[in-house]
Amino acid sequence: MAEYILLRHRDIPNIKDIGVYQEHGGFEAFRKAVTEMAPGDVTAEVKKSGLRGRGGAGFPTGMKWAFMDNRNWPHYVIANGDESEPGTFKDREIMEHNPFQFLEGVAIASYAVGANRAYVYLRGEFWHIAKWLDQKIAEMEAAGFLGDNLFGTDYSLRIYTHLGAGAYICGEETALMESLEGKRGQPRLRPPFPPSYGLYGKPTVINNVETLTNVPMIIARGADWYRTYGTEKSPGVKLFSLSGRVNKPGNYELPLGTTFRELIFEHGGGIIDGKKIKAIMPAGASSSLLPATDEVLDTPMDYESVPKMGGMLGSASVIVLDETVSIAWLVKKTVNFFRHESCGKCTPCREGTYWMERLTGRIASGEGALQDVETLYSVAKQIQGKTFCPLGEFSTMAVVTGIERFREDFDALVKAEASE
Amino acid sequence: MSSLAEKYPDEVQAILAKYPADQKRSAVMALLYLAQRDNGGYVTKAAMEDVGNIVGITANEVAGVVGFYSLYHDKPAGKYRLQVCTDVACALRGAVQFVEELCDNLGIKTGETTPDGLITVEEVKCLAACDHAPVFQVQTADGLTYHQDMNVKATLELIEQWRKEETS
Image 1 (tube, rainbow over the protein chains, first blue to last red):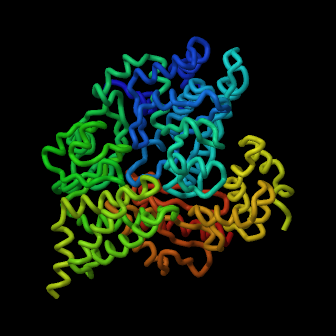
Image 2: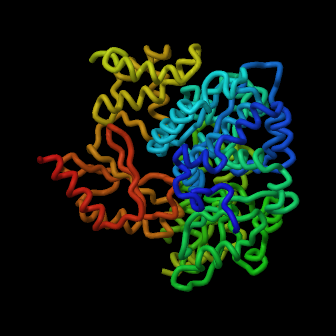
Image 3: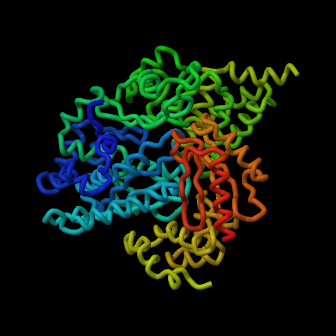
């Protein structure tokens, strides 16, 4: 691509320094918003850009902002920096290397919804990023970009970091807010949604780090410019975290609608040792497993096309599996993850992930019977549609699609035992 | 034991100042990190009571928070908790072999502590560094550091360095 929009540190090495960031137009979008635009105009521009949530759900960002309940104050903005989906490591790169563009995005979102206080929620493992962002926030305060009466107006804003302590579930927006309130990170019933009942029961906008990092460029250059990237229904650029059995794992900033093939074989350098690609997990451990057929490889990675192949784009954390990987083993790993991360609030998820772990463990170790595969499938299907939040649903995706699409990998293991 | 508020008045104030005055409970997580630092890497019952008093909740409620999150500990372990990610993406890039070989070299199993009380090896969930596997974080009382693109040799050298620091 001609120019980076999110990973701008790859074009401008010291953009993490406030002076360098300003030399490259830094905070001009925030200034423009606060001094020249009404809050509603900022939201309208973001709406027009077609920006959709980059954390996984893909909900239109501007629409979310417009849902804020203006009868109930104060308003809050939260940046979701919990980034815990196995296979996802994009927000981390943004915050470590292009922190001001992200923080400016938080600031613009706050102005748009009338929040005077914003929080950056970070997973506990991002200890170093919390310290780093605290420093960057202090620099913004010293330079007059955060604090009281910004740009000579009556608008005031402060941003604070909040460090979690290791819990995948806190990436779910209502669990995150519980955690920010100092409680166990267990999800709340939705509705009500955060724009009407959020942090401390007040209207709250909660956006992913990557989503917010798009905002300064959209305000500075306009929605029409942003829409020149990506597709009609999925405009803009996306960070694809590529991992697994590829030669060059890493983050790739590409327009939405780029194919899996281009990501994996052109940018990612193909498969390790020239092995054959077997399957793709397009949305981390929560993914459905997509068999790597030509049709799938040529599918554009956007919010509309991936579901047509029986998967989701999610946070676009693309884990690549080659012919050396047994899907029965893989499913054991994903189920182990979700069993560990289940918050325990609802029974189908708490008990279901426990039983799925026992079954997948038995099958993968070669001690399973044919009946175990059937039971596993049945347990997963019974979890679906019955859990309190998406985590329980996620835990079943690889199991169900693994058995449906790669049944031979399971049969091979249980058969081997039977023949001994 | 004296209260964190008496021992570290400025830090406790700075933590509380991040949240609205009527929402002190939000400070519980940061205060628990402080308590953990103060006590060599784990939180005692007395500390939970103390944190509860600062934010106005019961010790039981604080214990509920400690138990929920994986980075709080209520029992002592090695000075360095070496936490290796063995989740899907890392496992596809050799993390499981890495942790097995490391443990063999140290003569312990995952979850155990070396006899000198210095190192505890733990398997943890995704650390958002899948492109740099094998990766681990080291948790001490003072915080966390990441170590990316690691191998067993480099890790043993790191451990050797800690041991030297310990004896010097």
